[in-house]
Length: 284
Image (cartoon, rainbow, N blue to C red; front, side):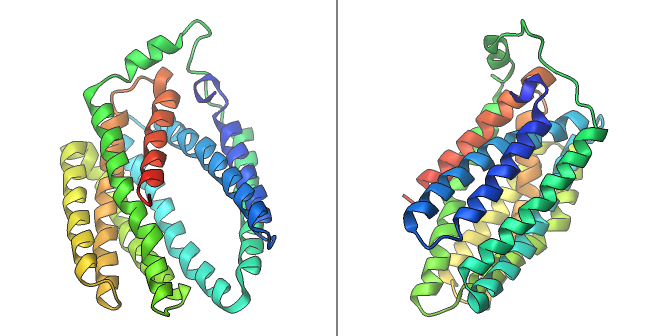
């Protein structure tokens, strides 16, 4: 689907399903919310591979890492605004109002994507006779395999923080704002570093940048084990954001730099499938 010229359509479909999921979250029925969660997961699964594939197609020669860094920085901004605003809305107005606001926000990217689709033309990168076996052969390289496995292992640990840290704060009587501030600090500290890390990945190679990010993340995770409460937990969040800023563009460039345009959609799909597998296994 991604490699046959339907990348913008995939982005629009992903945003549309997120909008539907946000609407279902407004209902006070756990069964409806569970269905919405499934829809939301499907939307993310469609959106993320297409977004990376488009970035790789539009990146200039020698600036793939920097372009991935800019994309990652936009995600960092969302990690600042989303948790900080969302947790305050949840604490003061309730979760139904929060999800209603989320549904309204989902309309914005849909509008932007429709406008961009009319002005940007992405070529079909796979010929009709270009078989799946050929694309699988194109992604069988050491960089992609190492990047995919490393991302899966990282998300196993990262999902533990996403799942259990807010539950821990809730169990000891803290509000959702405490974790929202933690996530916002991590997102804020990573924004500029993601762009810088992408540039360094282009210049010095993605492996060294990814290793630096991994080392910094290890420091932050270890520190969080000893200092899980604010204010020192916020220092760990700041360090974690810096680590993510180097890790994300470095590990993505390592995985995708040697993949042919004809196989980028398939490669990004496999990459994010392994990342989602880590998110599934981590809380378990």
